[in-house]
Image (cartoon, rainbow, N blue to C red; front, side, top):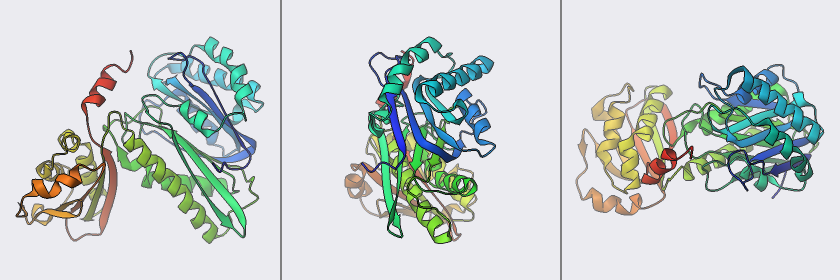
Length: 393
């Protein structure tokens, strides 16, 4: 694994919810780094989200991330904010970085206050793991209902000098833009201005993480944060260099977004819902989200049932502005519906092999406009119900 220069990873078992599980992690940059973040739009923002937004507001450099699973520290009021700050003080002392340069993130059950005694007890092990573990262990420390840890990496060269990017994330349920219920951390060893890094991250998140759905729920704790520490010696200054870095950041986030939907709680399918021909991008997005969030469409995907009528129905109630007779539906490249009527032939037989695949492309053209959108959606399974019925046990 090509880890960006100047970063060290840490992870340990703090027993926040389960014994014997990695649930506390950190990423530390050897030198303060340019930082950017994109956060949940939920009105009930968790204490670490509020803390990060406050810390990033003045554009100062940051030295790393502190992350935990098991407890969300959301809907915990002033005590939750105070506890969040105290965990930063504890970790900063253990890791050797300033507390006001450590960005926190939490995931887990909403409402419970931190047990600070567990945090304090875990600090020596967290500190001793710094630089001794890799991104895999840190990625495992933020898993909740995830079945696999999620990592993406890429690199490129500018004038013979290599720039590396690496991202980790968690996310499997309570997933829907804006944003998906997930934590994501990206590290890069290029040098770039704060404004350009923030703009780049926001743009790339909108094209990736904000275009996935598992169940239509948006969490209190969602965040995507990124550091760029300049340790490669490569400065991003020209338009061509900016475009190149953006391309690779987009690649990281595309990879992580797909892995989230692929690992959806109980999920067995990933639907690539593509909408074109809309009067506006907004109309296209309305259709994509209506189809991707429809329980009937999602359960049909789980059953490998080519019930295209559910897709057309969802487009019809989406609120998008289009004429019904203009809609053209293709599933896996096979023309299924146009001019207000199904295509002739045995669609069940034609679509059976397509519906059996894990990845299924659903394309709706709804008119003659230039608006378009894309959404990744999971199916909805019996296992999803079982996982979320017992989530707190």
